[in-house]
Length: 213
Picture 1 (cartoon, one colour):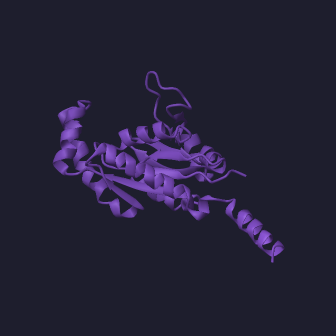
Picture 2 (picture 1 turned 90 degrees about the horizontal axis):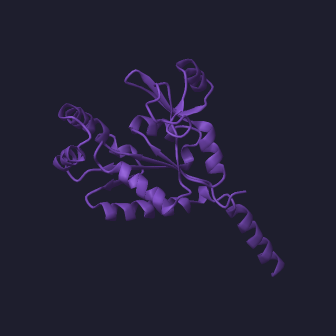
Picture 3 (picture 1 turned 60 degrees about the vertical axis):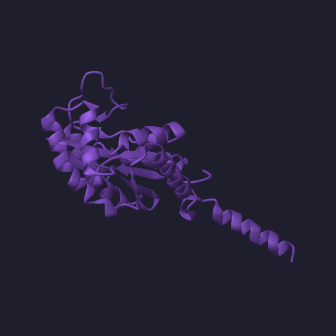
């Protein structure tokens, strides 16, 4: 039996709040944390590797997997289906390894309401201000102005669900937020439900107590 059960670590935020950078730092801090590889029905882009970037599936097979309960969460986005396969996650947490999810509030709800919900650690990342959020999106230089505008329109819908998460961090200082995130993960790993060996240890203590009284 593993020393502890793994966590399903959910990080959500509007685009530009720093979620991707914090996810990368968290995995640099502990390289045993694996990233959940999503399944999708969209066509692979140049350079993408099946099983590494995504699990590429036909729509028929994806729907069959959903109906069979093989997806922890799924959604239909811009004409394609996306989801998180259950099998690899169950295997990882059973071996005591944490799995990191970079998903939106809808996916977070589905996972928290699943059979694995009790092992979920949900964290929402807030920007310090809307002006700063917009500035970060523009500074990245990855999107055209109209795309930035669309991301900003969607940001409030994401932010409005902050109250559905167990922890909320305001990312006004990346290094400080990074340290808080690692502290949250460390504490969550020590929750009683995450330590399957505690019952056996307490029984051992009880036996020792009875043997010496």
